[in-house]
Length: 295
Length: 96
Ligand SMILES: [Zn+2]
Image (cartoon, rainbow over all chains, first blue to last red; front, side, top):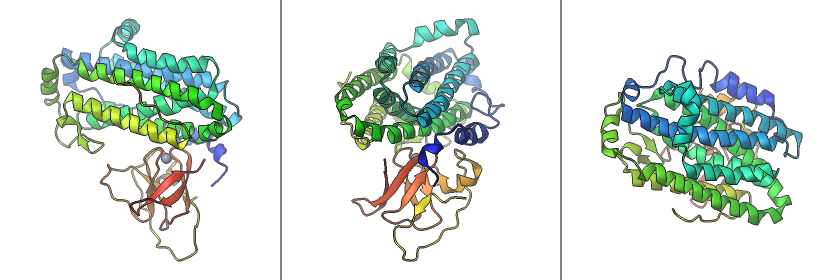
């Protein structure tokens, strides 16, 4: 296979992404796909969908700020070009999730207020820890925070949401599939590029380990808020079961049927999956995983 | 077309595989048959298949895989080495 760094090229990105899995899509999904009527008509389901989507917009805005900020901190041309493609991927994610807010009936002029109102403060803290490293042009810590911690979390969250949406909301499931494909490249870059840089800069390890522990805590606190503070839980569950496609196939993720899980079980499954992934991914690049406090 | 299998680990004859097209669309069309999505942990792997530990995609070769083979995961751009896991199955490790 050709030189490995040559894969971090705009040409490879064009052929895989815009000319590949995104060809023919509109905002990440089939041009004719729509949100389910019940989600648009029912205030409870709609509010719930808006709340979840806002967290995705907040996470992706952080990823956009981080990846663009890291372009100028990158030590080599191939990494700069890869991060330029990642910057466009993240900007696209911000756009498609913002578009979903519009699709869910949020007015353009109310977008920022809606995001401010629903943004989880713990997720904002998570982003701040990362962006502080990026602002200091700390490439190694920035890439670990962005491409391993943030993207590692996004990878699992998107996979879980995609499994849950597959039957009941194919439009949103398709939107998520494209972002999962993008995340594969991002986590791949994080591990492959940083593995060698960590070996060259072992003195950076303690600071990176502290960052991972802190980001992990804010991530767990975000999950806790999302899963524990579900008002009208039973009613939402009942409404969901009325969605077309519900129950036609089990919403399988990590060996579990998501539709059969209680919120607390889902929170535990997601948190354990993401933390286990952090541990393995960090271990591979020589960083010792730090167990975060449990909120 | 380049097989993701980069190098043969040993020269004994290997089983050959005809790779049918998959619905995997995350790499340019000419490479698609070399990858597939794994349908959960219960989805069995063939002797020519190994899971990428970085992005979880199944990498497929036209030849049976063996310990020491180097494979390439195009979806996440990782170079991998095939190793024998404790349970006797083949798995891929990232080569930095
Ligand atoms: Zn991979």
